[in-house]
Length: 94
Picture (cartoon, rainbow, N blue to C red):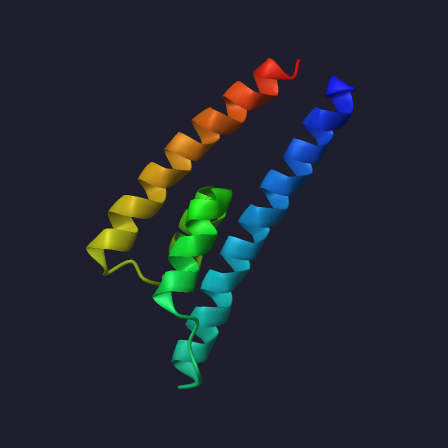
């Protein structure tokens, strides 16, 4: 049972982070082409829902939102906390 739970947790964590990463890329592309943008609230919500790691990687990969102090500070801190919680949960399911 715990092996399945660990697998589900891992898959969910990866999927949420891929969504956060993709949102950063989509918003950057739309910013370049002057199209409708992804609201900052949506980017923060994705990060809060355990997408902090993907959001942080996306932010630096796409060079997007890196001039905003609240993204530069909040996203990496959130990623560290979420990775710690994720590691703890994975150990608890072992």
